[in-house]
Length: 93
Figure 1 (cartoon, one colour):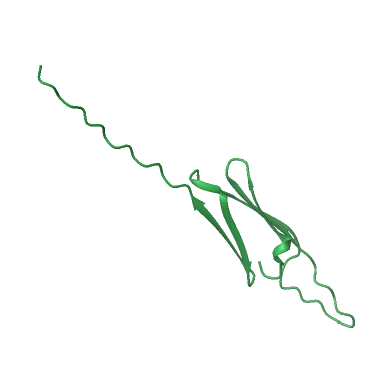
Figure 2 (figure 1 turned 120 degrees about the vertical axis):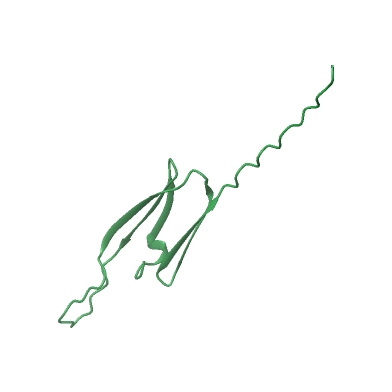
């Protein structure tokens, strides 16, 4: 996400485990006296949705924006421990 400030990016979790990343890239200010315009990046709003797996822990999602790279980490819910088999004593009768 080069050219964006961390405050311009929104990371949200919607219903049904959907991660939503949105924001808006604003047009850079033009310099006075410049006789040309060069734009390397598109401007405007953007939005991406990602379906999270069922075992995603939506309470422990972190997002870090550093040097134009957005890193979103989603922790997994630990799997339930398997139940130990119950031993039944066999009586002679």
